[in-house]
Length: 124
Image (cartoon, rainbow, N blue to C red):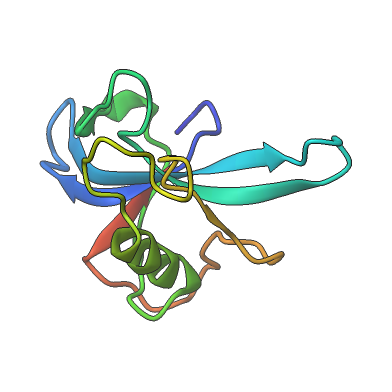
């Protein structure tokens, strides 16, 4: 996105003025309680207070759309997040219901020249 946000998800209606992004994930930052350590976490959109199921994006603010390879680190993290997605229930799941998965210390953004796949895309 032109504001620096990055979203990963299933992209639909790419030619529309407001394309649709489903099954949305983004990178969040998590600070340790003592404030000394900051780590990146993969966050499933929908865990916010308003619990959005999808998002429409103003096409004028999209800078680039890239496919995510099914063998990439990001695809594996999304797969892992889906496997650990808490089911609706009266009690809190062990992760506190955040849906967050810690990313390894490496960068999670796809490098140019890596093979594309139509499964997941990141709208930047």
